[in-house]
Length: 251
Image (cartoon, rainbow, N blue to C red):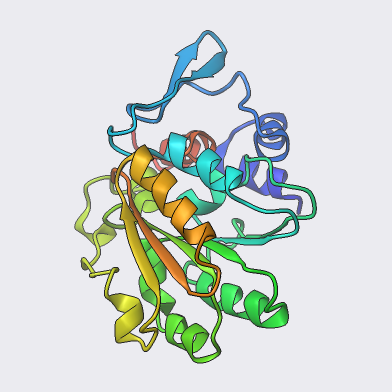
């Protein structure tokens, strides 16, 4: 089944809108407008993006276009299910870039092992992974395997205090969508990657600086922990989960 058709069945959104969003990098007229703090403002049927202040809280609306601009030609990008996939799938990548994602099956935690496989298959390609904190807790031990083999990917770890995509679908304030808070800055070292460069970003300026530092450090694993709000969603995922939530009978 084509991805757009499957997402239509799940969310009730028109397939044409999903194709527009996922394959052209633009949002269709069916979008209801931006959620608070996403860095976009709705005007009629189109969304107008504004430039955030360097010191304001980081949002999904700024995060994913900025990550996409940091990519190189031919680079492999792995995106975890949830905000990472739906935030990146609408971005334009450089020529020859490869994108690994599996939004249909919802197998959270797959992306760290997928990153390991992609990086081992082509050690000269410095891969980039985008993964949420909840998913990363499933398979975080693979960081140690990457360190053992001397792999040096860039990992964007989205710390939004739990399962944000699940909050949007069912259980916005439910305890089962909360997770234990880990010290992500110390995790690579605890798993044997003593030379990893661990950075954090909670504002656009901090994210900009962290991505520049990652690019300047190609011989070390780089983990950038980015902080976004628990209910902040990329536009496409917001629309899809709104349809799913309505089907679940949740206003």
